[in-house]
Image (cartoon, rainbow, N blue to C red; front, side, top):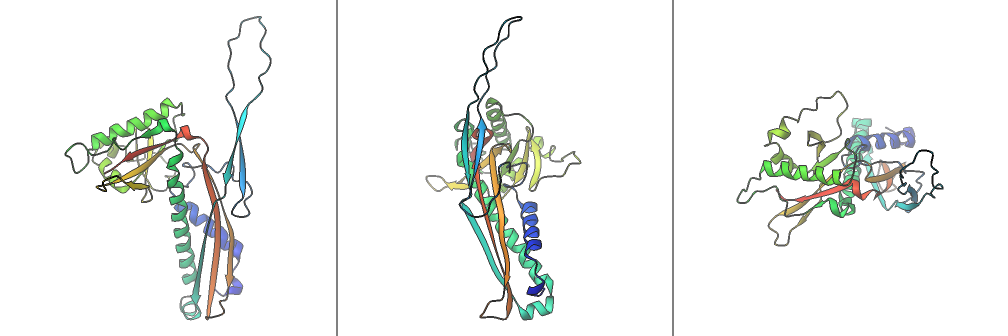
Length: 292
């Protein structure tokens, strides 16, 4: 692919599509993009207006009603705080031998790496969950003296996650949970999960989806955040659960530009993506801190 045949808009669209197909934490159904707005650079802000609760009062037949209440609201700001770029070149010799395939493979790899950065960014937003939705590190999937993990205990913990959302009046349906591979392995030892593992639906599956349990669509990711406990004996994973109402996210591929480096015989491409996210409804997000 000669540089004069490179159409930035087309490649930017392909890069965006590749990102969306590969995302786990930042895919539709996990987060929302309701307030994406017009993003032009890092540092942009999107202002989110939210309406407060409306009072419901008892009505008496033939009676009068109170004057209309004034709506209250609050404003949150979604800041575009992150900016990632790629910059690679294809030597003219490689280009002559393999033509567009080298460039296409490199762009696919760039999309994969950008996706990984975005997913890690969303995974780190577990700190915004409501305090009542935090299930502590004492709730570990390992039973006493059981080094392999206890599947029954995992199921109990999942039901506690369900209970947390119900107590927050989070509407059922569309609930998700993203687990690390180690926890998923323990889940597979419980028939209540493995038998529900078959989707039983003709709808498209979400990226990383591995099953359903206790009302949650379960997905698997290597980007689940973890921290070391005090004595360093094991890692505590921050398994996120919730609904798409919890986190709003916005991103934009700002630039995809071809150029000829002065110090080599090659075609090069650089790209820039900006993005940001915010927990806008903490009650719709929870964290299960556990180790496996």
